Image 1: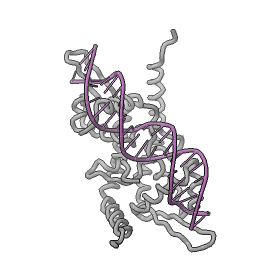
Image 2: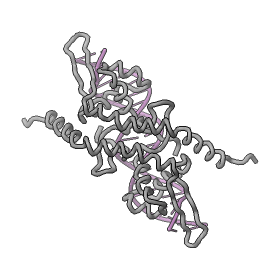
Image 3: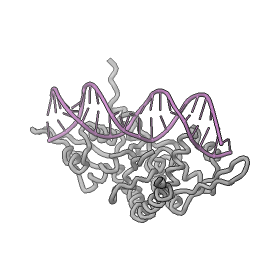
Image 4: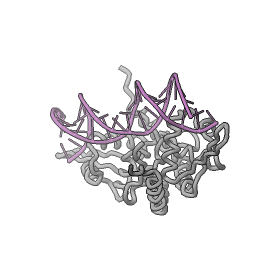
Length: 125
Length: 125
DNA sequence: CCGGATCCTTTGGGATACTG
DNA sequence: CAGTATCCCAAAGGATCCGG
């Protein structure tokens, strides 16, 4: 999947940090693993709409970056568990800061959008 | 430019927040405006490689979302200044959390990548 | 000086079907 | 169950040229 770009929130203080965390799924996956290890299908369920291909790609990239571990048990039927590493868990801290911002300012944002649309509405002829 | 997707850092705690901040340029633009208003070309210079089209699109989206203001002075030659709003400035807080994470853990991340590549190196034939 | 207009490339992500 | 393998698309972003 190459090195996906990253929100500068994680990259602006030095060389680019090619962590895959500003993409569509990584933060959600971290949240799903917050309470403990989960299996492939246990991740797929809450991440409504993610396809197995995309989930696999995301998990592989996160494993490569040391954010989580993949443990395959040699059983039938096969069982694989994904778990956060301390590094992956540490991401919850900046993620919380983002959530806090969202909680506090989402209203202002919506208002700004609304008044912008009002000001740029096409006048009826 | 429609409503671009957003890192879940800003969206996971409720309805999706379509703020344009996890994209390639928004956070960088906020940093450029941190010390005060800047003109179009003053933004273009530090954001090496950004094309006028993309810069314009980003600025327009941020203006629409209330993150910055655009002030055109009726002079010759024309002069336009962009400045952060309080809402835009408030984003510096979660951005700092991301930077802090980066400073603290970038080393671990690079190590993880390196050992992953070592473990997955193709053995010479 | 500030950007609008066009055209083009890249790529993250989705749909679907199939397998050890 | 836990993925692979293909094919496909939308959309962000870049290149270049042009206009007020």
